[in-house]
Image (cartoon, rainbow, N blue to C red):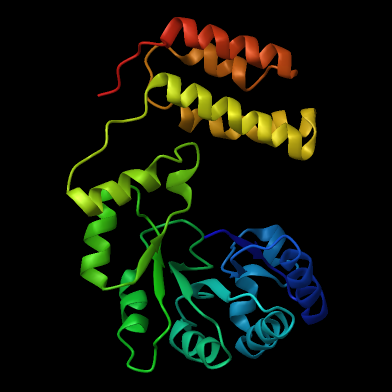
Length: 263
């Protein structure tokens, strides 16, 4: 399934966003009430909505009423340690028709510091009133941890965020491990080069050459993480200014590291 995520703090704008999204026929619409970054929160969107559950309900209703698609929500356990309200949030969102809830086990105040507290997620899942699927999120960065958390906390699924940045293979690795208990071989250097090039191409197609180049730079560190003697090439990838130069750099990397062995 393919979902499109939206966020906002205005009912009319959220309803309009849902209609725009519906035009491209995704399988679902997800509302982000969990984003902690300042530029989102300052606009009264993302995790800021956790401070006003009545507003969260109104915004969600506006989306549900404006679309025939299933609507899901991603959020956090609360604004801060003194206002953990995920239990109320889950019940009220389910009551108005939300089809699934993904919960990040941190408050907004934590941002990404400390450890995610999955006990709050488990408590929601074990609430006898809750029948919608509950997905856990936070700190899952390996197949072993994914299986451990799924079994320990009894959730219906796991959402992966930061661990997939520059490493999209994690999803297949987790699914394979769930099915077989075995690890897939790590992606080869050629796999990584191809993925990074595709990422750059798609970014440029979507946003134009310059913006695509700049926005892809932050991902190269993870695509080529842990490779010995790679510093010179990493520096090129984050400083070159044209697609032609970058594709030449990828060719150089392919020639120099094509048979690199990952342990």
